[in-house]
Image 1 (cartoon, rainbow, N blue to C red):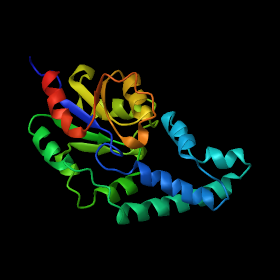
Image 2: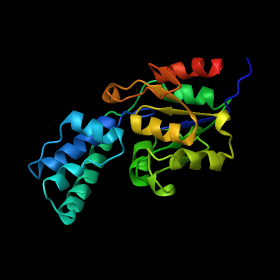
Image 3: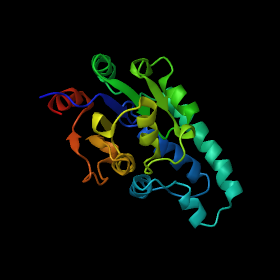
Image 4: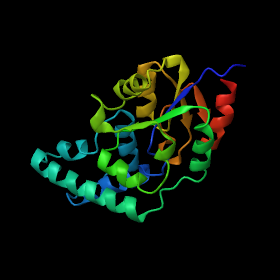
Length: 215
């Protein structure tokens, strides 16, 4: 069978690096300073629809000024976690090296550029990518289709030639709304999300090579 896929658009967090948990923990820490508790199931529901953890603070009557202050603290906590915790997903680099011989690849993420660059400093993953797009570099964030449509445009790629690799409902919805096939890679953190709209499911990222050989 002729392989029709020529382009791969990867999500970043939870797919290429194990950062989802630490972003949650940074939010928990910042909200706790307001005596607010962010339960995991609440956060996952907010995450699935592309909301923000600060909804919890606004619901309790906290002002935008207070929330903005805590948001800055959250960003500091997250960057601290990124530099002190093990966020490597084993096997990612060898897989990307092999795939880069056959496919054009990019990372499309809702991460801020400053966090993304910190995550990938000396990691070698972006070496295999044609480009990366962060949240500042497209109009609307996931679950809107804009991020993945921006990736298509930058590659000048057709939807049928492209595969998105995601681990969250928000990301899947973005790909679905963009009309691009999406493979969901299992992640323990987002296992409660609804992935019924996914075209493909894989248990680990290293199964992507076999999946692509069948498309």
